[in-house]
Length: 295
Image (cartoon, rainbow, N blue to C red; front, side, top):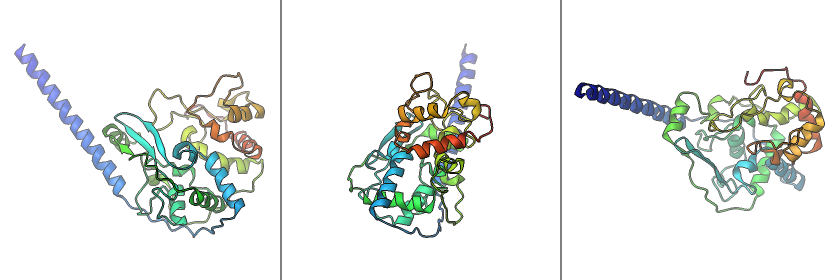
């Protein structure tokens, strides 16, 4: 019995050493990523602050997922508390919040590059979904954000917890999207607004964070295992869906059979899209190659 207990103690000690080593590796790698600096030198935005521009920016804020994380008026909120993994907090992005000293171009860099004014990467900001946003649309969104009433709300700090750091180190958590974005200086032009596949591809790029780069569906990166997978949006996944079915899904959050879409899907934001935007997305999805789910 004594010999057995001695072996148990040795195994427990070895496991403890391995666990400490893994967490130390995760801490070191995540800290290195957080300390890395990026340089963003996109051409300066041509800012306009007329009513039409502000209205366009408000539409983008409401329909491109900004309000889902940062709250309806940009005041910030706790998005998700995943225990030992992380606590995701979207900051206050009104003129009274974290961007109060940012220039318009620095706000644009945070949106499209996931980079703060000090050059460090933003945590969990899904900038890869906005990296191709046209200059005019970006300027309109920035103008809208800078027109918001200043809020003093402080939703608290974002927390990257031990398991989250290890997951990041192992490539299982998209902690710092800036690491995977092309930061080369360039102008960006959006396609003409029309119910075309070209414009649909532009609008639907914001769906890639959940549905995958090829829209074939996946388990949403960083979400708990209990979360439902994002649907395959290629012809393989949509099957017999019609344009009317797709429109109903985004307008009402209902599948063709009338069942409710998982509430994690931000259909409430997409319900505010114009008919042209929704029809354009449908036109684009019809051009995708049929791809097995998760492939």
